[in-house]
Amino acid sequence: MLTVEDYLVIRTLKKRGVYTKDIAAEVGVHPRTVSRALARGAAPERTRKKRHSKLDPYTAQIDGLLAEGVWNAVVVLREIQEQGYEGGITILRDYIRPKRVQRLSKATVRFETPPGRQVQTDWGEIVREVAGVETKVCFIVNTLSYSRRFHFWCTDCLDAEHTYEGLIRSFEYFEGATEEVLVDNQKTAVLLHSPATGPQFNARFVDLADDYGFLPHACKPYRARTKGKDERMVGYIKQHFFVRYRAFDSWEHLNQLAEQWLREEADPRLHGTVREIVAVRFAREAPRLLPLPAVRYDTSYIERRRVGWDAYIDVRGNRYSVPDHLAGQGVMVRIGLDGSLRVFAEDVLVAQHRLQRAAEGWVTVPDHHRQLWHDTLCVQHRSLQAYEAVL
View 1 (spheres, helix red, strand yellow):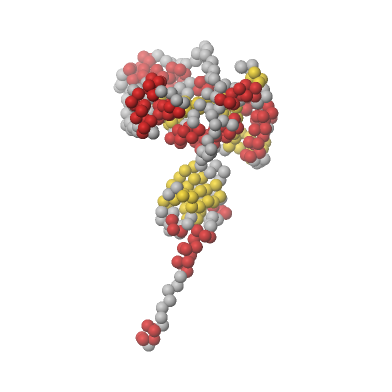
View 2 (cartoon, one colour; view 1 turned 90 degrees about the vertical axis):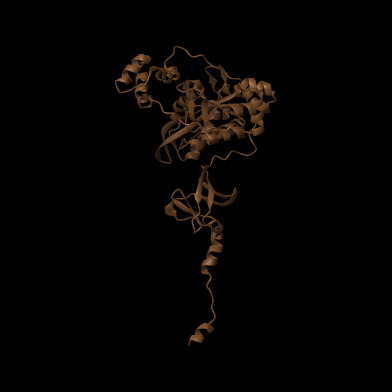
């Protein structure tokens, strides 16, 4: 059965003009399967019930033994049997087998990619002073595998939305996207990595890939050195940029200095592996990058809210007004990484605000509640004749 990743490969190859039968051979399916997928416009949906194993209660103990260098399945079996394990050795061996790549090897074959093919992405963390306060700085590093040109962006969070924002900023810095994006198995991009079916990517990461035209790829579990080019850049940034600069007026100041340092120090450097100036090597790669989409991908947080009967919604500890005709209805809110708040009803933008602390008070646009106040202030007028009749 086709996976989402298979469909992305099919669609990408079709756009490049590859014949259906050749696409089928590449993916390993029948040509009719490829034709149906293209006609459907998506991979078939499937749900699989998670199966429980007798081994589940003992996986932490097994991982501990593997970390200590105990890889003999028979020895591991005896250890967990003493703790009450009643299963067989076959499922134990199946559990250990994909983890054997953790064992140290004497050498690793270096894999080089052609220009424009791949960017590797990873996160790093360091503590530095921002606006006079010691702060944990999270920085995402995106490295072009061919030219070794890289870009990094600093922020206060490393969740999915910031991951996508950092990748887009790097594409904008390079003025183009790559055919592939190689990530580690962080949950912001990879929900799970099954030895049988491969990686299952986060839906929004797949959506981002669709917009920018790249194929998502994930490192094999416990094989993070697959993207060693990028991990070395994390150390390079810590040992160079964050040694030279230790305090910043703001996050904006930090990122301004980062891009200045990239242009003045990182891009002109002679790379030790390829023995070439990075900027010169990038000049050959730049024409091979994919064009950026006309509309930038929206990296905002997406949430649902129910409008109160007073025509306000609750967002992050404060209340914000919406048009009064939406009272009691459901709306979608998009919370931008820049602190903007947009409210949509049936995909139509109905309100915009800036986030602010609850101590600053509720955020109100008077026009939102004009009809509500009119209905509230209306007073019913009655004739006095009814009272005169009683008298």
